[in-house]
Amino acid sequence: MLDAFMTAARRKLRPLGNESAVLRYATKHNWVSRIHHYAVRFVSTNPAWRLHSLHIPHITSSTQSLVAICSNAAATKRPPPLRPRICNHPGIWKVNHPLNASLPAVRLWDHTDVQFRALRQLYPGLVLDVVLLSLQRLSATTGVLQSTYYNYEALEIVVLTRGRRCVDTDTANNSSSEQTTATTCTTFFIDDYRYESDRVQTNLVDWYATIALLRGGTQAYVWVRLLLLVHGAYVVAVAGKRTSDSLLTTTMFILVKIPFEVVVYSSLLPVSGYVIALLLDSSVMNIFLDSFWAAVGGGLNQHWMICS
Image (cartoon, rainbow, N blue to C red; front, side, top):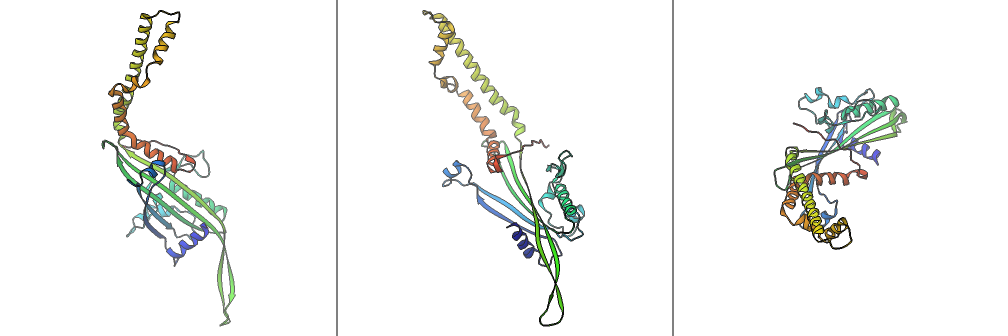
């Protein structure tokens, strides 16, 4: 299927085969992933826009590197070419070195270039074709209190590299005595490498002290109330001791007869603190869960950065 896709893309976008080709389009869909999406789909939907791009760089038998597609020289042309998405995150998005994990991490398009050069050295006699597909999902939202904001970006990039063995064959022309040369290519391999990244930009770090105070203060308030309740039960046990049971046993009997919700929910202070903190940072958890369930096998490798 990938072989047929690359052939069709080259045929449609590069009929002459002398220039790099680009196709960009946008799609809109309703994101349905978890049970509450099904429950409220009749009332509220979760639309998501995705920007797609398909790049087919011009590669010849003498091309030894893909670094030219992201070079500054290409960007200064008029009109400038539409560069792949991997060129727009040169210093932020870094991945492990493809050939030696002990080496420092490299930029994404350097990673792609290293892989292409390795395939060129491994298969010097093959004709290599490269197709780059990128997907970008952008969304912006605020917390329920509209004091915090979240700019979310999901990136998916697929690099397809195909190696073909091409042979020139002479065919006779029935209408004349001349012979024509036809090139027959057989696909030898297809390398499929994928990159995925989710990025969130938020001002939640500015609210860290407030959220920590709300959660920590209300939690401390609950523990203080619990300790005072234990002390009160102990005082009652001492004042009313008329059995052979120990004071500890009598205190525990008194405590288990008191409903736990009396300790937590009898005051609006801890409940209000938890609710306000949740309203401030609930979108972060929603974004995390969406990324978790959308990832293959639920695997996430998180890297937190603070940008000023």
